[in-house]
Length: 232
Ligand code: ADP
Ligand code: MG
Image 1 (tube, rainbow, N blue to C red):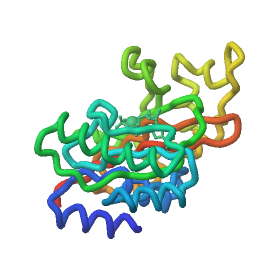
Image 2: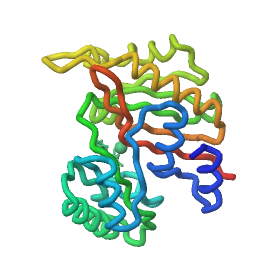
Image 3: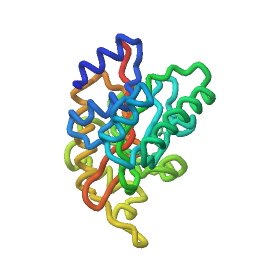
């Protein structure tokens, strides 16, 4: 789906948050590597989509009222059969209704479970004065506790993306330490540049988060995506 289609749909529903399925659709269109993700609105649909995605799969809640899906019990990883998918589907709906009473639930996102990589974050926020700003950092506690992130104003040159990666304190982690494999820094640079081009082309995008992106020795892929657009 194109960005324009997804934007029109969200605005028709009075939403400014694009859900994971929508965000990944438009980012894939923009050349950003993301896990193929579909929306299931029944247990049976989730099972069929899991077969198509290939086991193991991940199921996640899709709700405009739930920003942090794991916190609400809305993420089930490493599902390996139709029965596990059915049980996870039911558990997600039950957990999320309990965690956020009255939450609107659009369905459950189904995707292949990507192999674990080094977790990084690629994001964008809008500064009231300077406009769109790209952000890069390592995932998990590195970004949350240590605030080890770098920023650049959009538009970005090739060199800016390379510098964003090189500037973080945790940079040696991407070169591989203590037996951990090195990450494909070229793939990360390319993802940053593609996201920057995407936000440059679509001024309606106010915020964007790929959290996490898994970086591998060869390639990188975003397993979670979230986009906030401006009001109509
Ligand atoms: P949220 O950030 O809303 O809690 P995520 O989609 O980021 O939800 O999922 C939580 C965690 O589950 C991620 O940080 C990642 O470690 C793991 N995860 C999510 N999707 C996948 C996937 N497709 N493949 C492998 N791991 C995943
Ligand atoms: Mg996430």
